[in-house]
Length: 179
Length: 113
Image 1 (cartoon, chains in turn blue, red):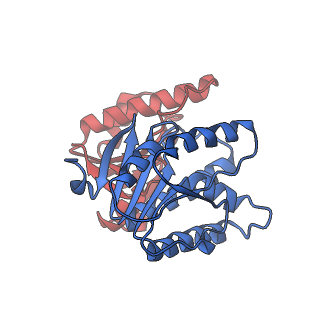
Image 2 (cartoon, helix red, strand yellow):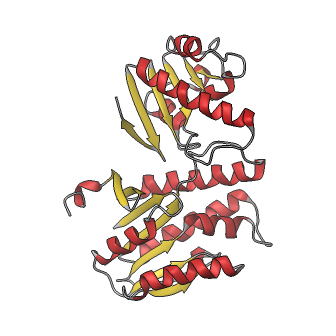
C-alpha cells in the first residue's frame, strides 16, 4: 500500500500518519527523517517528533538527500517525513544538479522504496493556499513541491488531507472511512 | 460557466486540458477577450476593481480558473491585503454564479456544486 498524507504546518499530519502506520502490518517499522537539523529550533522539532514516535516502535533512518540510495527490508513499513524538507535539501544542496535533476532523484527514490517495502507512507506539506506574495525562488520551490505532491497523489493508492488532526480522504478513503 | 479553483500549481489547467478537453489555444491569461477558458483571474482585479461587474463578465466564459490564496497570514502591505481580500470575494461570487464548482487538490477533482 502506498499512502500520501498532505497537510499544513502543525495540522497534526505526523501524528495522523504514525497512527495510520500502526494500523498496517509490516516489519520492521522504519521512519525516514528528512529534516536536516541546522539550529536549536530544528532540534526542538525533531525532539518533539521523536517523543511522539518513541512508543510506536519506529527505527529512524536519517535521509537528507539521496533518497534513491536508501535500502529497506522487503516486509518493512516505511513512513517518510517530510517531502518539503527532502525537496529543499535536494534542491539547495551545494552539489545540486538543478531542479529537474532534484525532482528526478526524489521520484526515483520513491519508486525504489515502493518496490522494496510492504507499505509506504509519505508525508508532504500543503503550502499552496496562502497567497503568492513570495520572492521568485520561493514561488519556484512551491511549484516544484506542488509537482511532487501531484505525482505522489496520482501514484498513491490512497491520498488524504489532514486538517486539525482529522482526515479528508481524496483518494482510496473507502478503506479507512469507517475505521 | 464552470468554476475551477484550488491551491496554487495543484493541476487546475491540466484538468481543464486533459479531462474537460480544452486545447491549449482555448486558454487566456487574465483576460475575457481571449478563448473560452480564463485563468489567473486575480491579475484582472487591478483593471476592474468592481467585483460584481468582473464576476458578471467572467460568468459569460465557459471555464474560469482561480487560485485559492486566502489561507496565509494577512499581508502587512495594504495593497497585497486588498488584493487577497478581493480575490477571495471574487471567488465566492463566481462560485455563486457557476453551474458547477470543482476544486482541484493536487490533481484530484472534487465537485463542490
